[in-house]
Length: 233
Image (cartoon, rainbow, N blue to C red):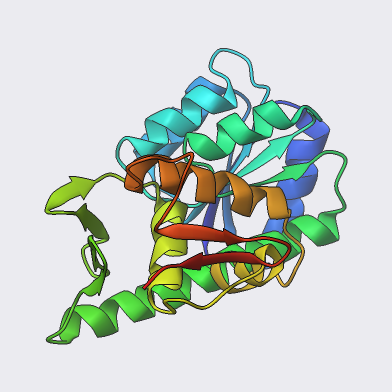
């Protein structure tokens, strides 16, 4: 069982989502606007936030920004907007992924299950690495410390969003190996190919902007045309 915060201003959809999650055994809190969402979070932090983009008072973008100031909680955006720029902005400010309305409840529950499963695997991995003696990965100028979730480039710390870190660590643990966007969705997001490859593209671009000397000519994270991405050893 996980604690899940559902932030949705449409009452019928909010009730339907909450009912379905509770039926699956989760502890669910609900909020109808951005201010209620932040108040609910302060009162009792959740394991996952389902966050509508278009909210009264504070929109989903601002709620996500504020959550990311103090937490790495997974955030799954619920958006009725079809404009890609809105999805890109949401991912860039720290959302892990998005579901576009209208969506089936089956799809949403599958995403929730995948996120929570992946979160538990990361917790287990964190426990193992923190108990070990060799708690870092070095690739070229990058030093990655999994247990502390910190990244350094040439001794300068780089601040990464939670899913950016997960993606970088996965690539770093398989240096030189090429992964398709679909493989990364499955292995990093855990969605069994349900996710949108655009999510991977946005996160790769953000990593390049933070880690490469020239993001327009990347030398660390390479694109293998027609195949996918790899981290150069």
